[in-house]
Amino acid sequence: MKQKWGFDTLAVHAAQHPDAHTGAISQPVIPAVAYAFPDVETAADVVSGDKEGTYYGRYGNPTTRTLEQKVAELEGGEDSIGLSSGMAAISSALLAFLQHGDHVIVTKDVYGGTYNFITQLAPRFGIEAHFVDCTDPVKIRAAIKPNTKALYVETPSNPKLTVLDLRMIAAVAKEHRIPLIVDNTFMTPYLQRPLELGADVVVHSATKYMNGHGDVLAGFVVGSKDVVSFIRKRIAGDLGQNLNAWESFLILRGLKTMGLRVRAHCENAMKVAAFLQGHPLVKCVYYPGLPTHPQHELAKRQMRGMGGIVSFEIIGGLEAGRRFINGLRLAMISFSLGDPETLVQHPATMTHFSIPCEERQQFGISDGLIRLSVGLEDVSDIIADLDQALSLCSDVRRKFG
Ligand SMILES: Cc1ncc(COP(=O)(O)O)c(C=O)c1O
Image 1 (cartoon, rainbow, N blue to C red):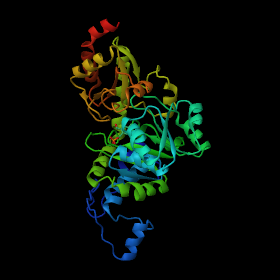
Image 2 (image 1 turned 90 degrees about the horizontal axis):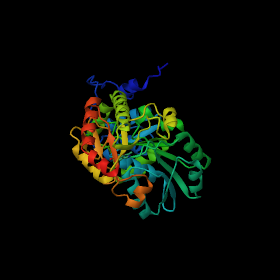
Image 3 (image 1 turned 180 degrees about the horizontal axis):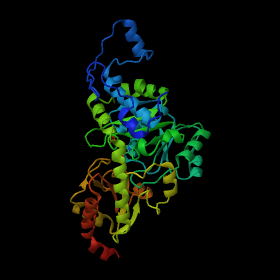
Image 4 (image 1 turned 60 degrees about the vertical axis):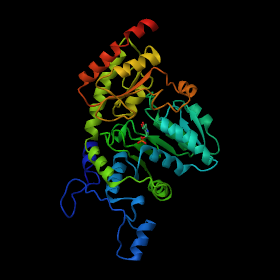
């Protein structure tokens, strides 16, 4: 009987075996686009899906296939597909369930790119959306319409770290036979496994913690074999959103240390959040690991750790926020997250700039909100950097009291 491995063991070994010809332990990179078949019948069987295999680079790749099998195992899904970015994964997953005339419910603070897709591109194809506060089951139920064909959430959310109760949302979705799609980017399968909590599909930006080194753009959709195969054949393949072999190799390498890295991100983030909470220039800190976070108890039940993202409001709004960010010496101003480096960004002018100001305010994205992706440096160095940058804003405090 196969022993049930722990997560770190699976992250190293799942789906991977030494190469049959060379004994190489690391995954061979196979960049081939074209594949030869012994006869027409075999070619037809592979194309139809009756036989496992690769036939053309846009519909799959052997290096990527190993990675897809590993990601499916880590998330506890039947299958997964690797795509060229997190947004390719999000748009494909939504398009797998939505067509002209359909309606989708989306949690109210989502990643800016997801917001753009839902509000700009999807309506051009007759898809209607409502942004709903998904912390409240009454509001979700009230938003469901006869043509609602998907429920899409992100937890913890970007950038406010709102934690949603996935079991509760999955139960509401099941009552109404609506598929639930969860963006698990901030957590990785190491910290949260939405499929076990009742979700139907998980999407990832693997650009972040899964690869973890800031050198690959990639995304995954994890779910049933049918959903994944539909996306491969009918959406991603036809739109040309495939993930290439080299980037798959890099993610396979990154995944081997994901547990180690994510544990260190969580540990550093908790210390940074505690430091910020005690600072007189900080109005409030959003981090699920803090007992003051509104969903702290839920986060402890649902998540194995609290993640590496800490958001906070600085006293003095835009002016103080700008001065603080420009004063950082170690942390780098960047749009990404989940890298070894501590990265800082200002959602109102950077990642969530495309959301109109009024709606940003409704989503709670104020001008003084700052998002930190806490890195893997010595936490004492990260905190010293934040401290010296905050000290540059002390006259703003005198002004704003
Ligand atoms: C939560 C979340 N989902 C999806 C994405 C999009 O990922 P990508 O940039 O790989 O398309 C991001 C990017 O920052 C994100 O933060």
